[in-house]
Image (cartoon, rainbow over the protein chains, first blue to last red):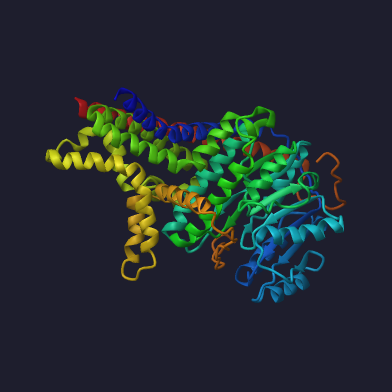
Length: 484
Length: 56
């Protein structure tokens, strides 16, 4: 029995690993000024070929191209190649119009046989661009993103370091008008991009060049075979790993801001994150020889692995903590109470530290999304956290012993059960008459649990060896109206 | 990118401006850290005050 209790306790402690790593990540991000002070940058304007893969993007592409034409960058050193993946809408006409408007700047490339996905489309363009031999660096962007005027020159300045092979920008959620889900995503990007990528700058290893804006030097692209990886659903992450394993440094510039439109409903978000999650599982497998091995440089470091695995294995930690708590409840109720208070204590510190740090890192987004920041774990979990900090607040609440036991058990099950609740919201979203309660219910259940549920969904798809299909995230072109 | 050749074009940013921008970036990062510390201290004081009041 004792051995079983120790095992169950270990499960609960495992549940505390992600919050501890969260604090570690944000602590690193906090001291990013140290990195900025030491990063050699200088105005450099290499000839940049911008690759824009496009499949039926007529609704969004025009503004993207106009913004590219307005970049603070020497015109002679810039070419934009729209690679049309056999679009059937007005994309070709739109690009030809823009090419006539900006002669020598915008070029139209077309694949007659489309449908293979974004990575293949990019590679078609890269093949032509590399054959032309004009470029010194290549910037790969999504068709819907809006680059701020100074973003490209802020990225290219990092090539002043001879070891920098690639640079990624800060992708910000830019849907206007925005809805509740856009605000959750906006806050998530502060944590997952602005903060996590600063931390990765500090560690000297980046997990992912954001697919929406990734700048690669000619040499680093050559080093990975001149092509984007097509073997996984996370082509940007695979390329990032390969570039670093080839000996190049990859850096994140938080001042190079790129606005993107993200999904406005749970189903759209689920589809996008299932692809990312499956891609991450594939990457974990494909680069299994790299993890925890310092001979692969910073990518093989413990710090980087801690951040990678706590993100990609979040559902596992959540399930373990639930199993541990429920098991202890039946084995030794008093011990389960102590373990839960310990877990809550760690979570409270993490929650407060991360929320404060995220709002400090990007105050503009913090002002827009403070409700979503506070309710990121969901109202139910926040109530548990408040109880952990301030139990006397609940002193007046008189519950019978039976109800109290039920609430305690619910709290234990909720550690993982919140993922099922988040999954249920996705199922309810298209149901007429019910969908109206989905947004408020997401605040109750939490956006964090939704992210974990989508990751769990990715495991299931991957285990079932579901077909690897590139499912495009639908964009309506509502990004940037307020950002001009 | 050691062998990068600078194209013969007008620079949108001079070296001095670029250095000023870099310093501004550094200051911004420091300001963030200060903001973070101030917020954390204020929150800690509020929490401590609440717990002390309730405790007494």
